Every structure is written in C-alpha cells, then in structure tokens.
Image (cartoon, rainbow over all chains, first blue to last red):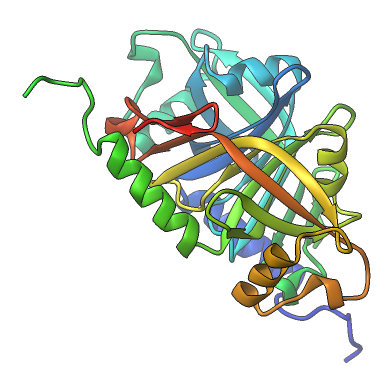
Length: 153
Length: 153
C-alpha cells in the first residue's frame, strides 16, 4: 500500500458522509457579498434535492439582494469541527416560478410553505461546484472532494 | 408592565449571554469578500479580549487576502439555533506588529503560537460595530443588541 500523504478519511468516505449530512441537516450558513455592502452571513434552512441546495428567504433580505448583484455564494454546514464548505452560484426563483417539486420538498421538510405566506419570498438554488470537507487539521490535506461540479472519487 | 412587543430574552440578557459565549467559544465563522473573488467563509479560532475578536490565519489565505481589499467582515458564533452575528472591520497585524498581550492570550487559549511557526501569519482584530443575537424566529424581534459599537442596554 503506497502512502497518499493524507491522514484521516479518504475522499470516498468524505463524500459519503457529506451527502449524508446534506440530507440530515436543517441549517446552513450562507455567505454572500455585494460590491457596495461587503460580505454578509446568515443561517438559513436548506433542502438537498440530490443535486442542489435549496433555500428560501425574504425577497427583501440582504441575501436575496446580494445574489442578484453577485451570484457567487459560499455555504457551510453547521459544525466547525466537521467542516463542509460548498462553493457555487445561486439562482433565484420567485415563488410563482419555483419548480413545484423543490418547493413541495422544502415544505415537507420544514412544515412551512413560503408560497402561502404574506410578503414576497425568493427560492435560491445552488448547485455545488467546489466542495471541501475536513475534520480538524489532520484532515486539511485532501479536503477538496468536488471540483468543477465533479466529485473526486 | 407594558408590552415591548418582544418575545424571548430582553436585550440585557442577550448581551450578557453573548459576552459569555464570546469568552467560552473557540471557533467563529468568518465571512469576507473580495471584489474579484466574491464571498468567502471559513471557521477560525478566535479570542475575545473584552473589546475585540482576535483571529489568526495564514498570510496567504483567502481571508487574509480579502480583508486587505475589503476590511468589512461578518462573524458568527457556531450555533445556528443560538445565533450571534457580528459586523465590523478587520485590522490586520503582521506577526512582528501584533500587540504582545493579544498574541499571548491567543497562545494561552489555544496552545499554539503562530509567531513560532514556519510560514507567515496575520492576526486580525475586529471590534464589533453591530451585533445581532437571537434564538429562533420568536426572538427575531429585538435581535439588534449593538449598534455603532454601543450595546443597546
């Protein structure tokens, strides 16, 4: 067996556990930016549909405003000792334009349907382009598990 | 007793518990942005010195690069159900310029002295200007607990 120089989980294990957490977790840290307003960060509920992260936020929120001006976003699953960072571009859907399947899965997960709320909401879809996953410094090496939208297994 | 319209903790309690967590917690989510590269988000170790958040990162990291171009940052304590968001500007200190008191307190907290490491590190100091704290939707009202660097108690 030759050494890979990587301590900790191999890429296939990191991918499997990342996908499990994308299904199981409810909250995700959403980092956006705006040329005038700088960075912004907030936790949102999210749904993983097997290919993309779906979130929903008030159309008047800083997150919604920022992604209109700068679609690049960074997402992070909650645990700081079991880090999963996702890089991608956000595509916004008005309530009347969101694919019904995604909206219904979101409502089923959270028991909340933004489409029936007063006020205007926007759904955000982020297809991961780059994913990094590590548990502490010993796993920093080998943390890249998706590049250009392709898993590295 | 007149109603404040706020459900959940009052501002003094949110401030007290936020300060306790700034002392007790080890990790903080750091969101930065760059005009060319967009947003970035990563967890870093931090120290609270009673007035500012101190972090340390490789001088070549995206975080260090970003704050040189755009000093505005957003910080968040880890828990998504006990949210503390901090807004401020990052000031960078090279290892030879960092105030000894801050660097030593950082080393005492983490058992790690970046000044003795190979490679170049930068210390970042963020004095909070705006702080928001809430536990779930019932506490969204009243979440602003610092404005213009002043606690709202």
